[in-house]
Length: 105
Image (cartoon, rainbow, N blue to C red; front, side):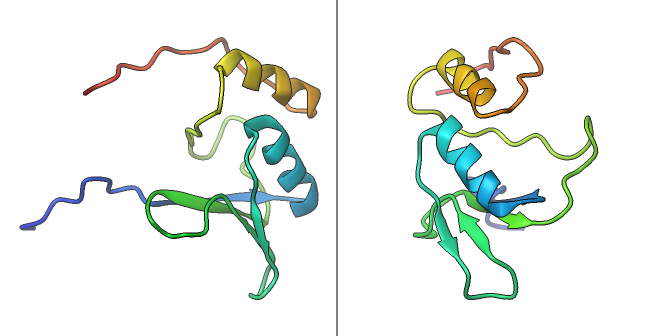
């Protein structure tokens, strides 16, 4: 391969049993809007719809069993602690304390 991509991971899909509850949960916890699209075979809710970089969507499906499935990192507009509080208030479960990640510049 002569060209290595700057960001090889460009998409994620998160399955939900109830897309409307999922949209409300993600909007509440992460404080961003999602764009619902009912034009395809299944409804989806896009995290970002300009296709300019890494993104993804929510879709109706069966989530992985607890402790299985991928780990997806999403950005929050403030602090991880504030997002964890919003997660709990929205009915989610916070599984661990924050884990510091090494930042490369």
